[in-house]
Amino acid sequence: MPPTTPYTEDLAGRDPLEALGDTPSRIRALTERWTPAQFERTYAPGKWTARQILTHLAQTEMALGTRARMALSTPDYVAQRFNQDTWIARESRLTGPDAVGAFVALSQMNRVLFETLAPADRQIAMAHPDYGAITVDWIVHLLAGHAIHHLRQVEMVK
Image 1 (cartoon, rainbow, N blue to C red):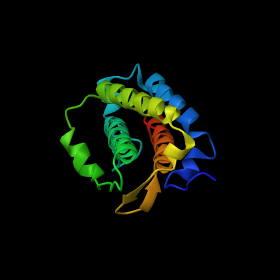
Image 2: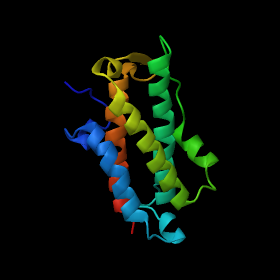
Image 3: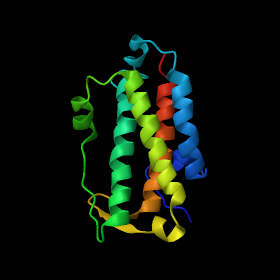
């Protein structure tokens, strides 16, 4: 039984490794001809711009990929919280194309790692201050659903 994450509905039963391979390509194709102004548009009033969403996707791949690697290499690993809004504010000069590139590269790096893991590796647990005991497999599923969730927002940018 796959783990339940905040993005389980977005993943909709898809294989997470397949989704991790597909979603970054879709985002790259969607944004490859965008102008700088398009990256600064939002999908709804008061929401992050496309550039901020793409930066957030890269940051999440970096943070959760690190969590998975730490759990795989550190007994009794405890994940740390991060404030996504504070992280976004610190990356205000990253361009939209650079955010896409970072997301695609980090997602690829994580997917390749995840594909090499044995089932027992994916069941390695860690503690999380908000979610309690989670596994590397939980991270795999969360990252896949999270990317799909934000792909839908980027698709709505006009």
